[in-house]
Each structure stands twice: as C-alpha cells, then as structure tokens.
Amino acid sequence: MITSLAVPFLPVPNARAIDDYLSNNRTQELLGVDPAARGPFVSHNAAVGSAFTASGDLARFPAQDYLAALLERGVPV
Image (cartoon, rainbow, N blue to C red; front, side, top):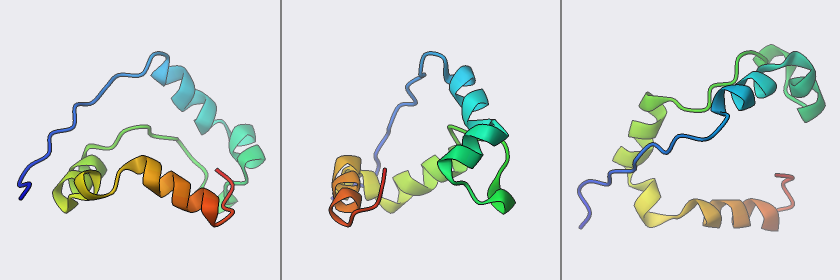
C-alpha cells in the first residue's frame, strides 16, 4: 500500500511569462474563460498539490489517462 507519494515541483522555463500570458484578459477571452472567473492565472498551488498527493490520485490514475478520457469524450483540450 502506498502511504506517501512525493512529487517534486519541477520549475518550468519562462513560467512567469506563461502565467502573465494566461492572466491576460484577451487571452482568457480567446480561450473562452467565463468573464466571472477571469483573473490571474496561477500555475502552482501548494494546497491543491497536497490534496492530490493526499488523495492518491497521482498513484492510481496517471494524468495521461485523464487526458485520454477527456479526448475520448470529445472535450477540447
């Protein structure tokens, strides 16, 4: 049984530029973001990351499987 899963935070080159781009109101408009939900994009949230780790999601269902399931359902990603 897995009791702990440590996932290192891997820095992304140009992360600040990506956050700035995705925070841009015009970019969010083009992506179809609901106007009520628009605002600063945050690429990493420690609380959310900890919740995923605690739930065991990363160990039991890899992200590529989530992506494949979305594509199979016709969700544009």
